[in-house]
Image (tube, rainbow, N blue to C red; front, side):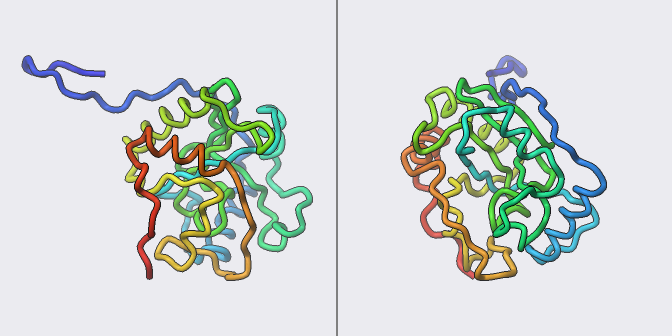
Length: 214
């Protein structure tokens, strides 16, 4: 979109895409656990469970339902998944979910802490997409991720846009803040094909090569 100033047309701020609110529980207990996670897992001392977004991590859900995804993220405490409970009882969550038809839902404010990517939660906005290896992400989801991330990059100093399967590339860099070096999980979502297409649309197709080493 262009605006006219003194007879000249200049680019307007990046237009915000249509986003539907689907808030998950955020209460004093979730905030307490988030602050505890920031301190014990990331070594970050903070009075508020807020992040300064510098990265976007794109995921797929592994299920085919927005409602089921929101229901999964809503509890404050993590149900099951003993491997993750060892690190914290804080439930996994994300700031955004995108449906198969491209509809964008916001579960948490952009700068609220969410547990979605080991080592990077302290600076990363998470976007979950409804889909799986069996049901690859759609063109509509690609379009919506592009619009949403362009909007987020217009608001924040976003240095990287990565897939969940790429997060281990940051281990051993200035970005990595996981206190336990053995706490790693293997991820495949959302895959190279989707991320290559997404970064190309964002003009970041050559971006993820070698992060800044310590």
